[in-house]
Length: 397
Ligand code: HEM
Image (cartoon, rainbow, N blue to C red; front, side):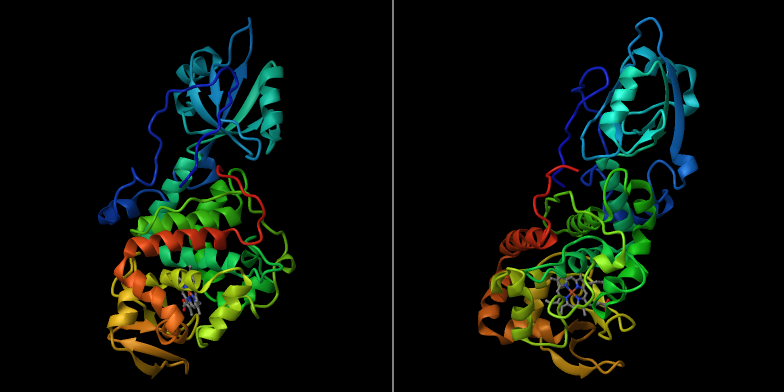
């Protein structure tokens, strides 16, 4: 997920690395039962289970023996190593509150959220009270997301959440800022976002409670969740960049989907009107639409019904193959929406526009014949989409 560590430490910097959980080391989709049985969030599901206090009293020039990872943008200090000194003694004397690599210091003598000040307190104060959270690192976050996505099969709605958060950009304003989590109006209430506040955000709630805001913003979490989902479902590994800000009130987000988010009832011209304004080409529009290779339409959300492809949890190029090779029959859904059907699979009018329009069709054909080309073009366009209107973002969390 493109996150390297930037280290600093209380005493000295470590170089030896114990295995951290990563998406690669997490069990594959086949072990779903085991995954459902493990706690939803690593380190414990409640604040009480996850947090513990550590009291250290410096005397006789003894070292702390605590190496932490330092990045000014973060609010916590992940523990990289305990080596000797007071920290090792604490661990021997307090096995129930033992500090482990991968736990993070979230507060030092009442200071929270400012890691430079927290480090200062560690160095300057003779008596230290640390509040530590178990398993609070980028690696644990990715592993918790992968576990959620595999256990709940919710990868597709994570991608849609990230698309809707970022996709409101219209060339002038709108950006991914997690506005649609805030009730009362704006993005939360847009028809085009139906299902996201009701389903996607609650799915992420436990993870957000643990990691936001100390390690990550909601908007960055949504971008990362989508990229973990794409990879977990067999798609390309997409780098996530960080530094999106969360708005505090819904009126800081956009108030209308008009000219910003696409409408599935429409045609090729509508797709161009919406996506060209954001800086995307015809090729980008086709590549991005390939996300419909996963997921489904839900009548209670959009009025459309059914999955696009046979395996709605596999991120591959079958959407393009099906667009070209299957016979699609126009039907009207219970809610009166026009859509195309083949067996249980579905295409929206905007999906069919990609084969009806000769310029779009060239790209559909290329992606149907070359999955690697789809993955490369998708990665490039999707990364740009996730960062619309953001300015400079960081490579590391
Ligand atoms: C091209 C114009 C697009 C239109 C008209 C469109 C429309 C829709 C609609 C109507 C749904 C069904 C929502 C529901 O009933 O649950 C949907 C779902 C979805 N969309 Fe799009 N979308 C478009 C582009 C995109 C893009 C660019 C992405 C991401 C790159 C994306 C990703 C998804 C995903 C993954 C789902 C499935 C969600 C789920 O299974 O819950 N869509 N979209």
